[in-house]
Length: 202
Ligand SMILES: [Zn+2]
Ligand SMILES: [Zn+2]
Image 1: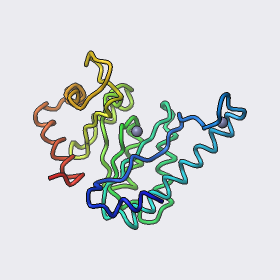
Image 2: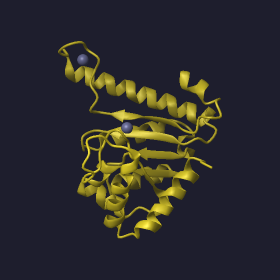
Image 3: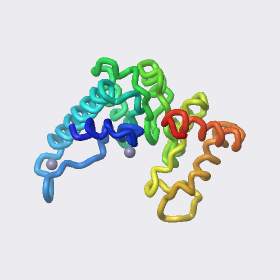
């Protein structure tokens, strides 16, 4: 796979994002003749890609974090499929994992942390919407949290603009601090340190 070549570049700091997106469409032109079959095939292809990337990360990743995308409209199935890939790849549980744009639950975090001791949870504006995800975010050790903009997507509520930018991270930070009951400045400093440490930024 081409990404393995890029791992030789010292400028490469992480692998991904890669994962399972059960909301993605097939590539049939016009109207899809077999939506159910196509959807299953897309999922199988994503499982194969994620498995291959995890194998590459274990063997040639040099300890770089892997950024995982899971999206399924709230069913939780994408996270289960992704975790299944980690289970099937020998050595994958040793990887540093950033669960990007977390929208899971307390149970998801339990299951993932059992298998992946070096798991970090990425918080975007959309992570703060579902009550089950807010509950999960309230209970996570602050050293495990990462703040993400996902710009230009996922404009934070109350930002008053149409396009997201990293400058708007403050809105997500404020909402996260208030839901956790954390001091805003201490949380900001912790999240900054988390990102620098996790991604080995100077
Ligand atoms: Zn199709
Ligand atoms: Zn994503």
